[in-house]
Length: 287
Image (cartoon, rainbow, N blue to C red; front, side):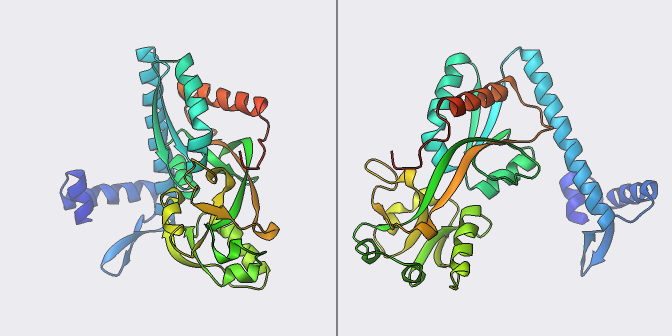
């Protein structure tokens, strides 16, 4: 409570009185003791969630008022997976800036679980990356298909023969965090095959930084085929073909249905729809 009061620029007794008045208005305790500190009660958890929603609403209102006052097309905050950032965004951003030269864009590259959390918190307008049928709280718009495969350095022992799931289980891996969907999918494949999940030696928040590390070791990884080939970030790597470990996923855009979207964000969504109509579910083969 003391640290909270300090961050708010108030005294601890004043903050304590404020909390007690709020609890009296609600008719329930918001906090309960936990060791030497405090934790939210179930009522407090509900109030916290609703307060965050109210804060997001205020932020969205201020952004909308600012766009109207300036008479501008506005600002768009985009989160993107590394694959879509490299192969989809250049075309989309080029079209957007051609149509609206004054638009400003804030781009965040990251794993899908992190980006979805930022989107849910109202810190992003759109997320472009892998989507699923169960997108939960978000509106999802599929754009193209992608193929994710097991990869290793060129000349790796498993690239010189027909590898099996058991062969792959004998090696260590470079993979994203356990909360990332493609890692969860891969682990389910191994478990379904009667094997333990892949043994992870390097866990990373961005796979795009590690192809050259993988190229100097016998570590395996799981990447989009769009990253493989001359001139690509995964150039030093080679696919280990196996149907069981080939993941077909959809890439697209996610946004919150209740969120304020600036004219720039709406224009970007329109361009994504146009791209999907022009190139419906692009080939998953190497380009």
